[in-house]
Amino acid sequence: MDSRTEVSGAFSLLAKPIRRALAEIGFSKPTEPQRRAIPPVLEGRNVLLVAPTGSGKTEAVLLPILSNLIETRREERRGISVLYVTPLRALNRDMVRRLRY
Image 1 (cartoon, rainbow, N blue to C red):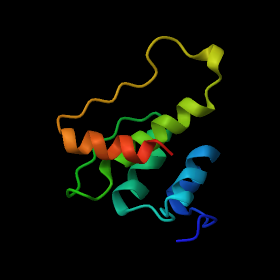
Image 2: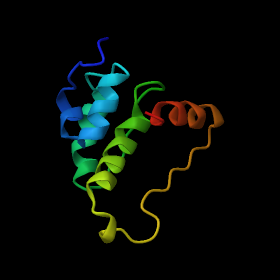
Image 3: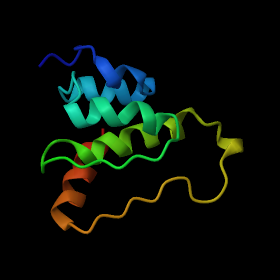
Image 4: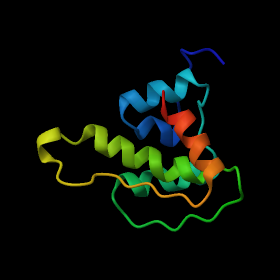
């Protein structure tokens, strides 16, 4: 995909740096779990997300959390802002690779 591809759907609700990174790596449209989970997570609501492996569950919750972190002024932040724990080493490495953008 072209790096200038626009993101759509729930992705368009995310902070500009995240939208830009998604477009650069070719993610223009959210998966169904992402489409359903991103809006309520952005609102700070509790979400239980159950979906098949590889459907984008991790991004469905991490992207809106990171988006909110980006949009929160530094002086308003206190303590730990985001703590990500995964039981799977492979998933962790995959996420680190994707989040480096």
